[in-house]
Amino acid sequence: MTLIERIADPGFTPSIRELDALITLLADDDHLDQAERALDRIADPAFSQLLTRAKDAAPPVRARLWRILGKLAPLRQDACEALLGALLDSDPKTRRNAILALGHVQRSEVEDALLQAWEREDALPTRRSLAASLGKIGSARSLTLLKTVLAEDPELTRIVQRAMLMLERTQVRATGSRIAMERAPSRPLPLVLYVRPGLEEILINELTEWSPQRLGPGRVGVELRAPLLSLFRARTFTHVGIPLGEQRVEQGDMVGALVDLLSSWQAKVALETWTEGPVRYRVEWASGGHRRALVWALAERVRESLGLINDPVAPVWELVVYELQGWIRVDLVPRALQDPRFIYRVATVPAASHPTLAAALVKVAGLDPNDVVWDPFLGAGGELVERGLAGPARALFGSDLDEAALAAARRNLDAAGVQAHLLQRDALEMGPEEVTLIVTNPPMGRRVQRHAGLRALLERFVGHAGQSLARGGQLVWISPFPERTRDRAMSAGLRLEQASDIDMGGFVAELQCFRKG
Image (cartoon, rainbow, N blue to C red; front, side, top):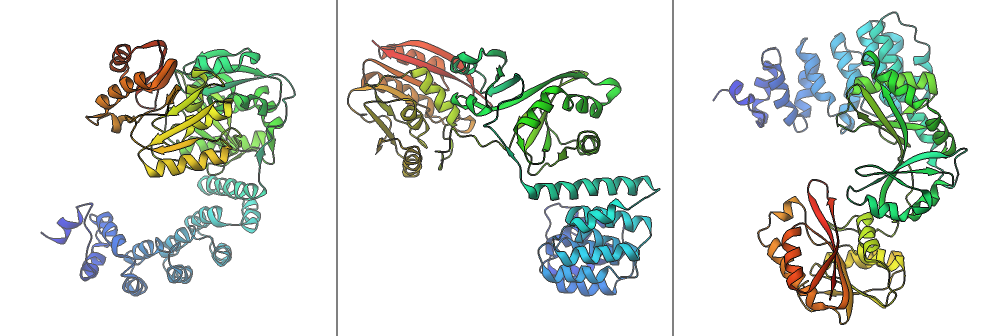
């Protein structure tokens, strides 16, 4: 097989002996991309040889070799120093490739060199590259320079504007921002609380004083007049947002529609009330994707009209956009919010319950100070912690076969200040005596569900629960095989009192509450 045939394979890794032949192929436009991909894979061990060839090669191969070497600049000091020297190369394309590569190296001497290059270079392609790199790694000095640029070239103007946006958000990020949850809005403000679909009624029962309304699957609405922090007495919602309403997208002007919604009174009240420090935001498309060109256009318009800074890396707020056939709906979500409810969660294990789901199971079970509680599939201990925080119980027990799970649960229980007895044992072994409440979230998930023995295990467990519970006791859990576990529960003397389908993120399970006797 020839070298040309081998480099066509995306998984091909060449040897150092093939270096010269690959460099020769860089002059062949038909095989350029494949040759460059192969050289990328050996660029680090072959750095010295590539550097020597890059200095001696004729254009266009010289520029292409520097592009390969440039990918090592963030990783190797010698590569960065070589690129700084290439800024003075006689070949314009080589200089541009060095400039673009240095845009990934955050060092003061790199910014110095690029600013000096700006003074030397007046060719439009080179200035475009310089502006793009200064926007990525520059400081206030670069921002000051770019603000003075008056370009007739539309592309250079676009790149300079984008670079200034990037530099401004870097500077603003350094000042810090937070969500001031202790503040009440200046006027009653509609909010949406997001909850796992299927748990809406449980959340509504937690929010009776707020006159909650079900807005749709996974969404419950309230009107807030008190500090935002007061909402976090409810433990089953995942996060909170401010609905900004719906807007028609006229003639495809998505940016205009988004700016209109961000200019609404709801956004103004929320941002002014709860943002302490500069307002930084990111855009999240509910249907997925990034749409970078659209986001950049929005960032420029929003900065000019509202003074808000787009920051996809460290946002304080998130703009969640739902598209609805010519309309959009937008929720403004505080992302820098410090959720005070689950700070006890200092350790976790794979497939551990989300704390809002654990809280929902406890809400369904109710509170009895005489309860002897057992979680036979302990995981990270979320259900025991939530039951302990909800109110007194006679005793709390948890068991698991996995030592890592027991260790994680112990750390979480200690962090929450909840006392519980932990045992290393199988869920089908005898549980504690006089158990009045079994509350648990057993192993599940699409990968686990394919396990041939899981269905039989959970059916056997339901029968075991019927034997372990005291008369009048409850089993509150989530079943991935609801029909089978219902039938087994009936034969074990358990009566179904409550059931609801729960979205588990890719599959549906059933929250079941059984009572014995």
